[in-house]
Length: 338
Image (cartoon, rainbow, N blue to C red):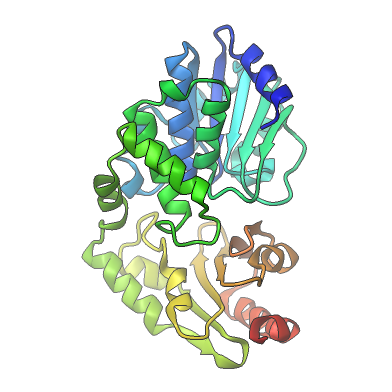
């Protein structure tokens, strides 16, 4: 964040404001961790602030300090709209296009508030008055740590803030194994631990939360896996019927897509998940090396994200979507096999 933006933000928060913090739809660990970490910080400097999520988020994230104060736009619609419309500032975290907030999009587009974006995805839009964007960062949570430090308030990072930011970093880095993890990331994490983040407890709460139904759903996903050796690609599918049979709850498929990349020589892994309520196929893409799933998702499946991790969707049924996906691979064979 440049010095001009730092001074502008200092001026904005020098007096009490009503502030909204909004993460993307279907918020993950980084979206919730960064939002709640920022929420705790802004409260500590005397601001009136609420986190407003577009929809619900997984139960394994609901232990974070402050989660009970989060407004759910779908469930608390009237209260959320009233708060947003009366806000002076709106922080948007872990996304860079207003279309990523689903049904909240027209509300945000009509706000008179000053927007501040903090995000690490590629190709940011220009809706915010102040944009802190860096696609080389491991996570938005690491950026919130830098944001607080840049304002000269690193000493205000409490154990609650540290827990939230650590959670966001550990989820978005795949427990520090993704290529976006840098020495600076480890330095930030070390400081968060020093400030009170409990690494063991946090990882246990996030990653060791299996239920019998979730393990059976994982077994189903692995059984459905298709390996395309000619393209160094593996994909799996989960139908709505399979989700219902295994009592699917939000977040249960988190991490399933990564299993494909554990297979020798596989460079591209995908999971297709049917969502009949929204009438779409939700897609998660993962890759190793220089193959950009961000570009693949943007070009073909209404999505985007990072070079090695992205999401998208298809408005076709599963059969048509899979045929489309397999047909596209021939165009990328050289990239996937060289």
